[in-house]
Amino acid sequence: MGLQAYLIVSAMLFGIGMFGFLARRNAILMLISIELMLNAVNLSLVAFNAYDYYSPNDTGAIFALLVMAVAAAEATVGLALVIAIIRTRQTPEVDEYSDLKE
Amino acid sequence: MVTLRNIIHSAVAMMVCFGSLAGMYALLGAPIVAAAQVLIYLGAISVLILFAIMLTQAGDANLPSPFHRQVWAAALVALVVVGLIGWAVTATDWGNATVVVGIALDAMAEALFTDYALPFEILSLLLLAAIIGAIYLARRPEDDERAN
Image 1 (tube, rainbow over the protein chains, first blue to last red):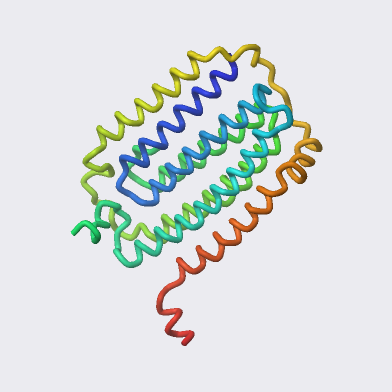
Image 2: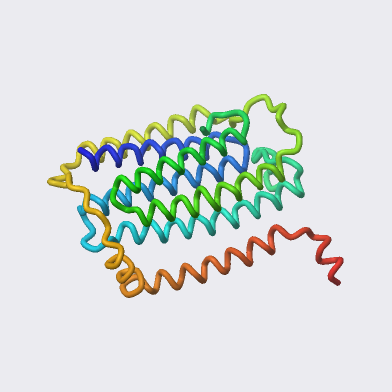
């Protein structure tokens, strides 16, 4: 039961992050939502590792650490992009970024 | 936390969420992952996001709604995904996966630097590229002109 509980928490966290990414208009909050989704995946990796279901030698924890580093890189570049866009467009709302559509 | 109108509140709620995830990692017998979570997410990424919010939120608190028009479609998609994952989790027979196995730190370190040495090195390259890219992107255009 314990593994299922962790996986369900992970699924709910992923769903919350997905809803935030799809529904919010603020670019920074979309990045926060991406971080939530990455954390959800990390939680399921560590849970699988801890319950020793698939991983004989701590593969899940190692991959969780690698995912964390990738998430840090993604957050850095993403926030730099968002700040650059906000500097030119003067708004963080993503539905104002419609130059290519018009 | 993704429904809060004030984005600073969202960021603080995100920090609470990261902290509780660190607690879950410690409960799962992975204290090294919990420590990395506290250092990377609570320490670095939260501060980065808070700084970005402070740099960018000038005066746009008078929005009609923080959501897109497609908020109901987004909620539906998220609910369907959660439902599918939850169904897959509950319908699967996990066998005897009931014992929490703690991480042996020395074995994990050895695996990280032998079996997973290549991903580790690629990751360091990725971080270097991310640093250079972030500096290039966040630089103001007039810095170029001043340098020339």
